[in-house]
Length: 318
Image 1 (cartoon, helix red, strand yellow):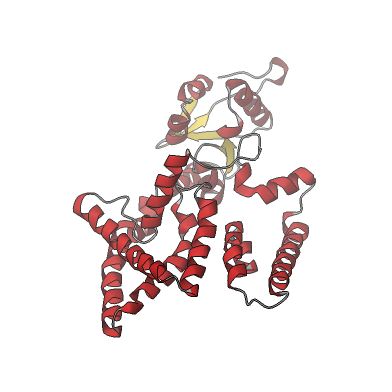
Image 2 (image 1 turned 45 degrees about the horizontal axis):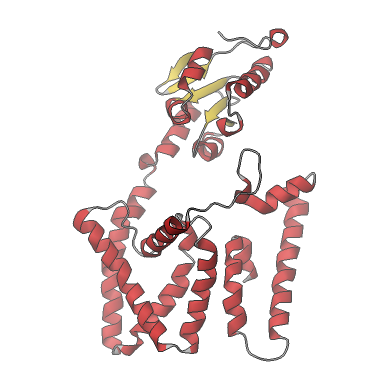
């Protein structure tokens, strides 16, 4: 449990189910919680002291909040949706975690939905048995649902942990079948779902040429100096520093022209070059603003932002 929680804090939501399944002997729950808390605290202390090395309490806060503090002002934010929209998204992700039919259409989409419903139907059959094992997995799923019904219910990767409980229940649901029929059902489902997921998700997502963000990052790396700053928005905030190895000029933190002026002046004063891609200019809706600075074509879809620093006059544009 501690190792899972260190992988992602969301796995703490399995703790209620684990407490429920513990032996009913005296002190079992207390010992479990003490071991869990001790391991987590020790691991975070080691990471904080030797890896993260926060300089103040605000750094500690931002580190612990993680993706819940990605706002421009780095304040806490719960990534959710309206209740009905969240429930609809959560339900959809419950299906997509088995077979991601989202990119399909017509008969192919219907086949994906059917493949996703089959293990869920078997899991529902297991729940009707009401035995201790089935109830444990129900509590397991309920714990995660309590979090992911409100935290990014539209993000399918958070639901992968549900597969543990859902497949456990699906296999229990198959117990009523004769052994031969049980094996045949599993083999048939895998034989259909494996090529389906390979064709609709795995192969397209494994092809670098099909990843527009990655292709853009490679183009940036080829068309800019190593010390360049790159205007970024959206996923480029991650792809540019990781894959292009360039410094990001993040428009999230430069919300208006005055803030952008000040930042460009500071970079120009130190002789730093700034580049922007067509996509960043269009997705940010700030192409006109950058055009006033001057955009010098550097490569296909890539421009050098021309700006001469004039600190005494507050900067200038060329």
